[in-house]
Amino acid sequence: MALPPGFQTKKQGQVCRLLRSLYGLKQASRQWNSRLSNALMSKGFEQSKSDPSLFIKGQGMQFIVILVYVDDILVTSPTLSLIQELKCFLDATFKIKDLGSLGYFLGIEAHISNERLNLCQRKYALDILNEAGFLSCKPVSTPMVPGHQFQKEGGTLLEDANSYRRLVGRLLCLTATRPDITYAVQQLSQFVDTPTNEHLVAAHYVLRYIKKALGQGIFYPRNGAMQLNVFSDYDWATCPETRKSVTSFCIFLDSALVSWRTKKQATISRSSSEAEYRALAATVCEVQWITSLLYDLQVELIRHAAIFCDNKSAIAIGENHVFHERTKHIEIDCHIVCEKVSQGLVKLLSISSSGQIADGFTKALPISLFQNFVSKLGTQDLHAPA
Image (cartoon, rainbow, N blue to C red; front, side, top):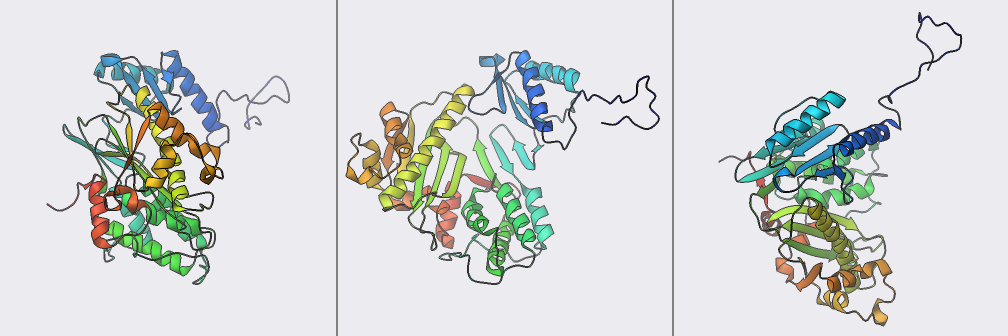
């Protein structure tokens, strides 16, 4: 850096040496994370191997957890004095601003009571509707028209593709507390490179659905059983252009939804059993990560995770330790299912298609089936009229 005008120095050619990184530089976030991590670990905190943004310390009533997102921090502990001591340390080290009890964090509204925790993004949803001009639109009952499939070819290319990309990006952020729109947003996000007017109309249809329940969010009841219930599903060769399948799963801690996903598979599956088996592999990896994260949080599961699947052939492949000719073409990483079944981490169970909760993450459902799907997700709208 050049010296500021008017600064007097004894030697010519001297420059300023920065003692900290500046906002906006590429290395700024890494330097801040390194400094914060070193400061916390100097106080005896351990960085979680499952999630580097999670720091833990102590056991029992002396247990304290810190969750970090850049310079926003969440702290929780059964002992209030530990939280106060930590805040004093952080204020002396970094000069923090104490915002009190959790109420609004990264656009997510948290409502806490003795019975439950509710997370929603009502204000963020209102901002999306306001920006798109849909505050006074007519609501609809589903985020997608059942049976409708998107294609790249068809329709007229948008003159301003950035508006579509911005809208889909904001909808992706909204899926953090709205699992009911996950499949619709996943479909729309495939066409951000060359969006057409048909894709924009479908995105506006999602906005009309959001208008129906702006305060819809995830409901977490207190004192639930420490048991993972997992639902894994697929939609075989659903993409009309690539014929790739869709993987979906949803993971419940007792009745509380903690993880969900809708994603197109990277390769083409030759059978429905292979597509389901690949979906099971992705699900088992997520269960393994959640189990290790719960272990860091000192949560003991009462039994192994139960994975419900509606394809008996995929279950047979997962429980069979002798791979036969029909599975030689499947990648080795997919066979993690067999390994974790033999280790006792998960148990594969059959379920009927009508009882498969993850079905709503693979396709657009009719109104009655979609309402049944949403009711099983454990969501709640605190702002709905009485």
